Amino acid sequence: MAKPPNYADVMVNDVLSNSSERALEKGVIDREVIRVLVAEDEALIRLDLVEMLEELGYQVVGQAGDGQQAVNLARDLRPDVVLLDVAMPVRDGLSAAEEIVDGGFGAVVMLTAFSQRETVLRAVEAGVMGYVVKPCSGSDLGPAVEMARARWLQMRDLAEQVGDLNERLGARATVDAAKSLMQSALGLTEAEAFTLLRRQAMDARITLAEAAALVITHAETKP
Image (cartoon, rainbow, N blue to C red):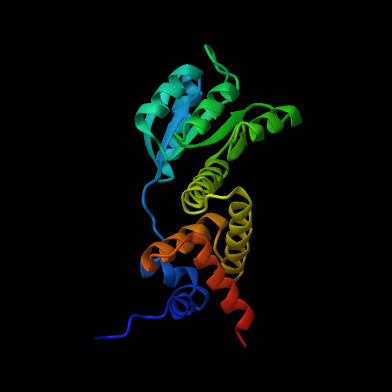
């Protein structure tokens, strides 16, 4: 019987020793389509957002014109990311964001016309994963969507794999350190580094924190 590959060796060969281009070619970095729900009360702006997202390769699975509709659609559709305006009729965006996050319906990226400190702090308290100031372009939306999804998946994975809060915080720090190493070694974005690390963990059937620890160990012992 062939000896199963050592996971640390796999990480050396497929992660820290590869370029991002080679990792993409080998299918190590997953490029699955991200599903987005757009919630914006001004129809023209909403259509512009939908067009920009689709041009970036995202799948817009729903559109909402008020905060409560955004919550209802997020609950029903379970998108990867909800792009949500702060100032919404019926129910304001921050209140809607809290329910979407608490319900585990998807990652939230807030849209606002003003980058006010108080609004940003309230968004953070609501569990928002990203923040974009209007008017915005595709170069603003893309990174915000990618980062929000990556951070959402990281939090969800750690919550499922690590029960104790203190252990979870330690695991998060380990994952963040590993992502940083992978970004430097491969020239990846944070979202791409997380996706690659998560794929390796799934393939090896180990936890995200264990995979991250192996990356760090290899980097520390590499001559």
